[in-house]
Length: 238
Ligand SMILES: [Zn+2]
Ligand SMILES: [Zn+2]
Image (cartoon, rainbow, N blue to C red; front, side, top):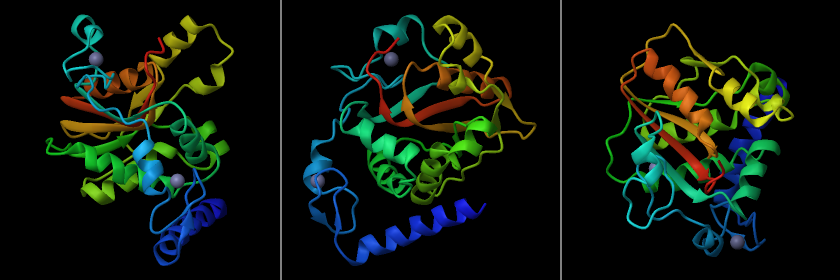
């Protein structure tokens, strides 16, 4: 609890501080005002321009990709900002493992500008961490990102609809097939009735198995339209 307080305070302090005096860009060290990255570094981030609307895989025409045509994922739409490659992977590692929570505000700002005029969901649901994992890390990076998005979009955020019941991250030594099977049962819906249109929030869309399992769980309890919004997407990993 004390650690959370310190993290939050540091977060607010950094936000305030960055608006008052120049801070150094996290990537190149140049001094910039009010941003965690300088404009040059932001411009060079590997943006996903056109992508499959269903799974966010980069495509040439923004049409459904072959995989979504033959075997569509559970979610109805996906939006990812960047390709998961250098330096985005470093920024996300900072955000996830080094308590650089103020990066959530930067990522949220960038994500909001990409949402354009789409019909917004009624609720943001962060992909939950297993309680053991949450205790280890002290915060859920997806919840932090969802909270920042919620402020910009004025959509409520809640982590009370979905629980992670299998600690899949601790199974990295297991055979791939076994892990894939486990992830399918990793989530449980709570008894709270979710609205019909929601967005799942996560940091990276990798194989898609996690988002798929979470979406499937929520569909079973009546959610009709599910979107998956992530900071980055791994380009074909499975
Ligand atoms: Zn820079
Ligand atoms: Zn696709």
